Length: 214
Image (cartoon, rainbow, N blue to C red; front, side):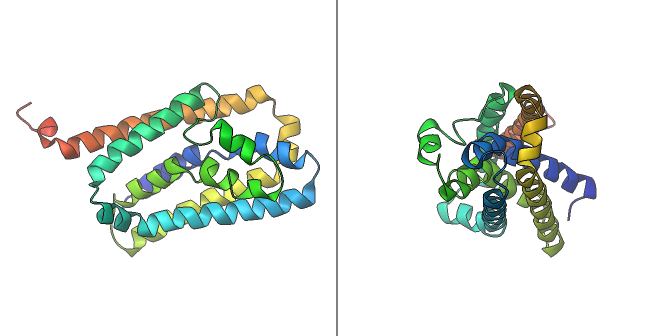
């Protein structure tokens, strides 16, 4: 089990990757600002879907890597590159195309379909979030470690539910500029974490990089 400060770091990282504010424009476009009943249903579906996907990644992600013969160091580097691409888009106040491209946006513009695809997958619980959960799961062992990360996932899901339920209120009080500022701050945090993932993966693949002789 890691230190409690490490789990706080995991929470911040996962919250930055999931980025609940990124879902607000799509929610408003689908439900409108005052469609409380429909919004309640969508929020429940989204939170349940995101939670299930991330918990599956937590408890089965390592087995998937073993099945495909992928080392955790290689996965750290690939996951770090993915997070870096996402963070660079967030620093520009945009949603990365690695999360949701234009075709997916057009396919999910109407109705309840948007709750699962593309809102839950891949906008919120996409490759970046799944990679983050798998990578941090490898940093500790034991039942306590996995329970703590499960609590982190549930905490992020709780914040996501709150943001989705408050979307009409927030959309009326937060300007697009305000939303972009928050997204850029999250992008900066995510970029630093991406660099850390890549550096750790390179050290694992090339131990000479940490040799005392260098």
